[in-house]
Image (cartoon, rainbow over all chains, first blue to last red; front, side, top):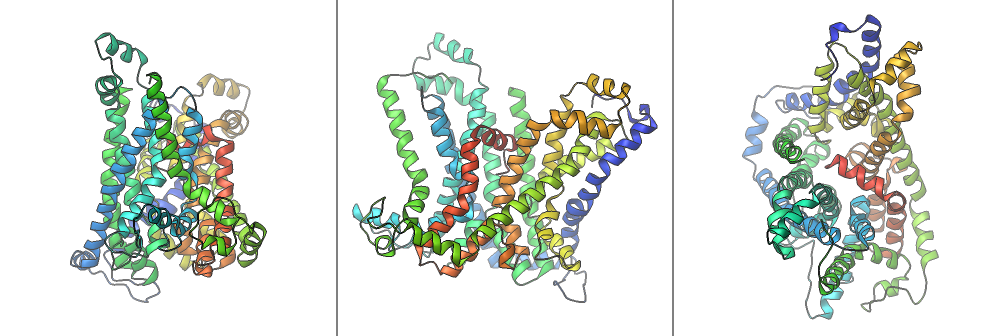
Length: 299
Length: 278
């Protein structure tokens, strides 16, 4: 804080400031802080939307949740989705950033083209993917057929559906990680490469190993955590393409929350799932803040 | 990074990039290609990019008559525009005060903004829904717009920007007799245009593409945003009449893709800035 303490301010300045911040305070309390705290309170009740009575049942919802096989299935699926999508999109993003930044021409073109999936409306593209993945008339299986592979069903096969969704997740987010890595690459001083070359790092691989990779370390941590947070929130493709099926094989945390709270209107139970979701996202966010501090340290 | 390497290296690099590009862009290319084809060519296993018999008029015509596509796009404009405008009305004064004025509770408010940055949009969904239910506003434009009026990211971004404006500018204005509101409106606002645009890109892209919230609060077809409309269309088609369906997805994806191609640099800067918000 650079400005002097509040008690130096003139009454007029204080009045003006109060008027300027009060809409934001009001909106914050009514629309964000209040509802977020209310989730915790609701998670301790047996309330169902529209029901006349609401009883506090302590940790009852959580006990039920942790004893529910569907919840653990859902939590596990979300973890598997993240464990596939995050490394996939981070390495792809890093590879693309290195390949494109090292090119002598066409950089702007490649960057824009690879970024395109990030800005396109995911729901519309999910419908397109559904068509591409169609077992008989989909492009993917037709192409596979021509090289002698029988593609099978991508979205209705329980051992495969989650990985298909993860593939779409990688397709959608690789471009975002690419531009984040590009920002990291730009911050590496050019003289480091010259120094490495003088010190005998002759090949591109050695320069990558001695300069780029260590300098990019904090950026990599940051991109990984941000990808983790995004992947943990997977919902759109699940709702459009699989509805959690087949056999709960693509049931993910937000989808479980959505069905409990907004299809079955088990408000208290849905709130408990939201709390679990929020705790994981906040833990990841704290990691991100730590990664961010490291990143600014390296400048 | 330093461009360099052998000629072979260059060729290999571009071959890799182009091969990757083919995979990344296939969904877009196939979507457009299918939207131009008649059913018998769509269901043929012989692959071709362009149709033998053009069915574009038929497919796009059906897409526009089966569901109110233009209405969905208009809803998208109303909702994202409404959200962004109200976000500015709430964020700009607060950001200016946080950056430039001394008052009680400033540090608390800024801490709240930082905490707000961490909370994912789905976390307050249930109580927000209950509130809208209690006041009878479910299934309305208000339900789509009002919950997002407070933007921690908007306040944070604009505050960081106002911090960079020299204090002398305000002092001079105050000596000229301008009040804080006038300083904000006549001096700060014009200066803040680039930062507002960056915020606008992030806000509009994320709310245009948002699916979770409209899915929860909207039942009426006429109020659907583009992503929700896409789902209605898909369900109507029962996933078999692919020509019109792909024509519909072309129409739904086009506005943001065109906007992106027109203002790439600002898009990429804005999204890099926000890191996690799409």
